[in-house]
Image (cartoon, rainbow, N blue to C red):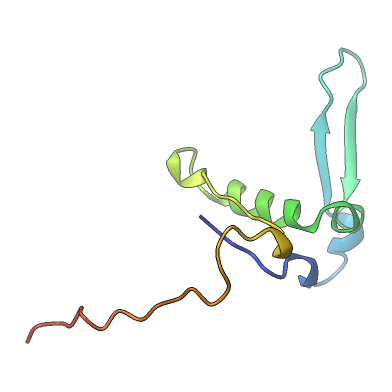
Amino acid sequence: MCIVLNAKDICVTGRKLTDKVYYWHTGQVCGHLKERTLKDQMAKDPTDVIRKAVLRMLPKNNLRNSRIPFKSRIPFKRNEVSRIDSYRRKK
């Protein structure tokens, strides 16, 4: 599971905000290829940008089962990280 807390705060270099385009097909027969720039996609859903970037880098197997929730919808408690001292490397 991948949890991204600050997906809306990503920075891109160059002209990627206007030049990077996301395409998808609506399923209709003729001429229904839609497109959206990175700037428009960040305004609509910033977590989808991170989700697509991560999923397109991973192989098509069980590693692709990632979830990227919004900051307000994290399914875990805050500061739930616990330290494990029982694991020590034996010399």
